[in-house]
Image 1: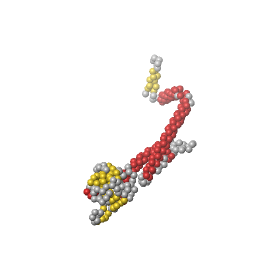
Image 2: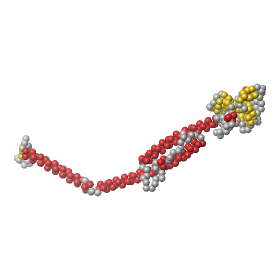
Image 3: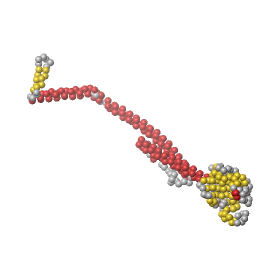
Length: 313
């Protein structure tokens, strides 16, 4: 195979026989020289355009600037962490006050302290955000994030506990308000007890379904618990009677009144005046016949009379 090379001068040409060993060697050497020249030219061009080669301190200045920016960023982040740690301490103080209130309410309600547990360690102190000693490393973002997560859980727990505590206290107060307790009169003696007795009219044996309190005409009669008036007026042998439904199956009756002060359907509270003592109906003198009924059956009121009544309201 021959390669023909034309010269820029007219009429002059050169030819190479590639089959000849010397021709191949010469061509390889020429190619290597061309590639080497291109590579060297590239290096020299890079040297002229490189800032590092032109100024060896350039990258050092850039790195120093970046270090300064990182240090400034770290300082600003730590300042924010410190501020958030202070806010965490304030929230801890609120939690402690809530715990103190919860303990007080649990104690006042005579509730099980194991059910309503308000004894916890402040999260700021537990996480190391409070009273950091000088020279020691301040807590970082991971510690703060963990503390905030625990604080959120603690707040949720306190919210649930206080809601449950409120419901228990309200229910307990409501039950106490409607539970019959105390005497229907301010003064007066018990003139007849619950149970078997001789009938005051015919002397025959009979069962007395309540307790009689003797007193004076016009003496106020009080409801022994909150409830709804279900009877107010004359009723056979009871004379003028007030009947109050207290819920939970409890009903109280106040009989032989001179005057009734309430009406059917009216809500009454513990201690409220509902009637005036009299001797209406089957009665031998001024007194109040006081009954306590549970699920329709008369029960002995003495146990309720002897109880100290809870405060009204």
